[in-house]
Length: 136
Image (tube, rainbow, N blue to C red):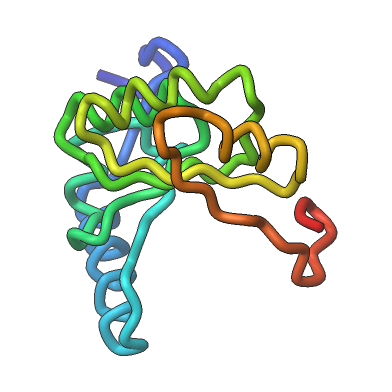
């Protein structure tokens, strides 16, 4: 099949390059003595996630991604986008299903909503370390 015939959106990968890059990431993390927690928003594929992961879990951008990867055995996840109170019940449902899910917040009102939620959700506070993208 020619690439011009592939329906979009589609994930098209050079498997050799993917394997080399994944191994390079794992090797670098090992040399630095840190856990590699790859962000899976781009790959959107459990098979590719398994190639990239080292056992330290992963990072996702949406609860839908979290649900997909949890359904495929990735149960240690960080939601890398600051959450909002309307998503807490969905996050709690994932946790009830056995997912270790941590949420991010940079907002005191959201932090209070997380603390008040009956599920015991774990949250990380995002702090602006100079990039001015998010964080307080």
